[in-house]
Amino acid sequence: MISVMLIVVALGLRYTPSDAGYLLHRRGLLLRSLIAMNVALPVIAIWIVTSFDLRTPVKVALVALAASPLPPLLPGKQLNLSSQGYVYGVVVAAAVCSIFLLPATAAILALRFHTRQVSVPKVFLVVAVTVLVPLGIGLFTQWMRPTGHKRLAEILSKSGIVLLGGACVPAIIMEWPTMRSLLGDGTAVVAVILSAIGLLVGHILGGPDPENRTVLALATASRHPGVAMVAASASFQPQRLVTAAVLLTFIASLITSVPYAAWRKRVHAAANATAPAT
Image 1 (tube, helix red, strand yellow):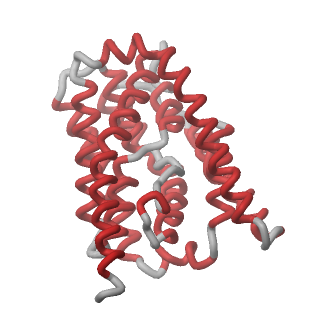
Image 2: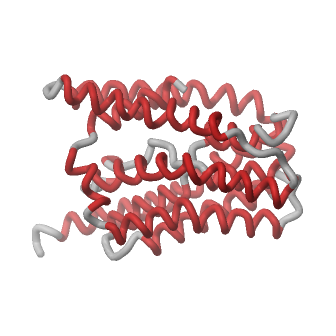
């Protein structure tokens, strides 16, 4: 929680008024982004999990992860992208929409898989604590301290990433026996398929701008595991199988995104190299 909060505070420190208006002045891109992240992927996830013979808690975990907001870890500078306004704007838009989307998805899951309803206050609390409140702190700090906030953002971002790695590794080790049990029942295959489809949907709906395509593809394939665990765990006891399924799917999405990100990095590097000559 602390690591993600630090990363989002850094995001708020870098967020500018022009970033806030990026998607508002591109309503077609905003609509396509919301459809890709908040409509297409959850619907595809429901269709995929019903097509495979998976355990019900795993099915709910996969759909909950598909309906969760994206984590505030989208690469921008790492891929040499100049459309930082879109990167920041899509994180905020997804967080706000998840407040309404997750309860609706939970209602569908409750009807389809006969599970308990997800608590709306719990979902809102996780989204608020990990995204909305830290973002507000970053924006307020930037307003109070117009100079030096970029350096502070760099420090907080790096610290958050280090802490995130330190927190994830023990969790994966602890849940590894349960995660290993999911490797042979098709869960890992479904996770990879779902991540690949997310990349494809985002790439297609990203529009003609290559950078926007890259951002939306990665955003559609990436999801916030903390929010998914809260949403899915509310339906089942014990929660260990749900936690393992969410972690396994999250890792699969990261691995699946690596070759795509490497390809897009080469594409953007080639475009930047030929731009001066053009």
